[in-house]
Image 1 (spheres, protein in one colour):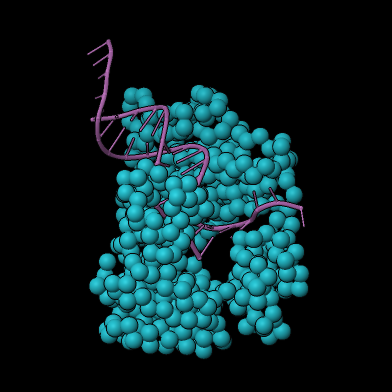
Image 2 (tube, protein in one colour):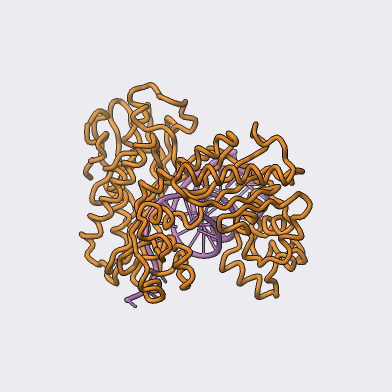
Length: 447
DNA sequence: TCTGGGGTCCTAGGACCC
DNA sequence: TCTGGGGTCCTAGGACCC
């Protein structure tokens, strides 16, 4: 725990709704709800005027309409939100170089890395927070923010929550336990509905009561990692640093349909479009990924994922789309599907084309495919086999046809062997073709 | 007119390797 | 030939956050 309160947390009040009220004066002072407007939409943000009627984030929009029929219901204008967010984050970076945005409307700032915040007594911190809030309001055209300051991310976040709306709260060092103790265990980040229910069943509802539980008991109740984390957080111990840049670990796109869909061809086309969007976003970020995941939510909300890990990273829309389609073909859609999604993980910040050009542009690929790749699928393991030289074929480690994925099994003497197999179909056809066959690069080898 | 979209982290089991 | 422990990778699911 830090000896000084050097972590600041800023949270914009009812952000999306506030931007709408700022840009449309007729909405000021009135209930505004931003969220999905379709039959299956949910509330993203409710203005404070709408909250009076019990409208909350994550509530179904239909229920919000029932509670507050006279509110303005808006679908959201993310370009405007992004622009406002950028202004706020820039202001925070004037305060300290170490700013960690958590979302468009929220960020942590490490004041220990600040030139401005040298004086760390509570009154001085209060003044800094008020100055930031005033600047945010003037630069964004009137948006209000709540600011909390404490000795850790946990305490700063708790403080901004206590400051809401439109306020400041500093939790001085040494007072953490007093502030935290009487609060609901739900106030601790990481304690959601499921964890709160488990705690309730052993008679624990407040932070003080969490603190009274032996660490070992918390671990056996919640798992090793979560249990240990909760035991520490309940005591105000939170060593998590403020981190300015975090690398993305996955990229995904998903969509809930207005009505359940059953036609595999329609669903396949949707998966195709999603795969393309994932590829675009990867390419725009200069990323590629190895694991393609298909997410399917059935009519009854049963949700499943299916994934395939490729032998090497790609941002090729054709490969992503074919893999997603192949995964979808394993799913029974006859009962009705309400959502599908396509995602990519196992990201690398280089793309396979770099290998072709022979010159990695940004970084040396630290986890580049082994020159003699061993390819793993769920149920089948293939390794480059056969006598004679073997050669890595960039971009062609996985190819597809109607049999599912096919793996480059081995190559040599200018020839490449491709074996088609999936977990479901088992070993399939084998083809041998010239190493420079364009179908290899294109991933369109047929069995 | 039940339950969004984009993420992160954790757990657990099986396969495989040494 | 049998047994086994530790580490890593992969898949799937769950909880959580904003």
